[in-house]
Image (cartoon, rainbow over all chains, first blue to last red; front, side, top):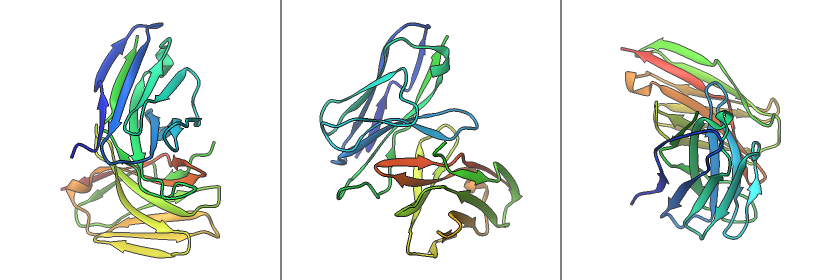
Length: 116
Length: 109
């Protein structure tokens, strides 16, 4: 029972390179989220997918794209990495019982990205 | 910003003492949640309090909610060194779970 799995755990990029962070959950959750965490700023929502087939912008979407590949997987892509995107990225999921989300989130262990 | 605000930003106490951290928010909510994050790890859900509840207990945790003041508090009683972590409040804005800025708790043996 893996829960939420993120890959890679660590990555170093050069400015302008691209990469994709992968996230998969095995709890049959319908909602998935990507957050970034920076020192002193808590977690900020980048993108989320309330249900399979939908994606929406969060608080800080610029410079990122997402794909909800299927119910299990939600990937985050940096097309042209910038030093400001150096951060720890967390994927999370939850069961959405009705029209709106109200439940607890289950988090992955994070992906630590450094952009030089 | 949509984020919740937490205070204090950092708290240092001795084992056995109680730790209280506070959260304020700006929107109307269905519920408010508290999460814990150990250093270098993902967040783990601790407790959820619904908007029609004023107080909730879970083990050594006590959460209060005052919707008129848009504030919540988390009390950890009889703290242990293992409680050392960061603690975050969180609330939904439509489908988006918004987090507070967090309180770093250090419990000294």
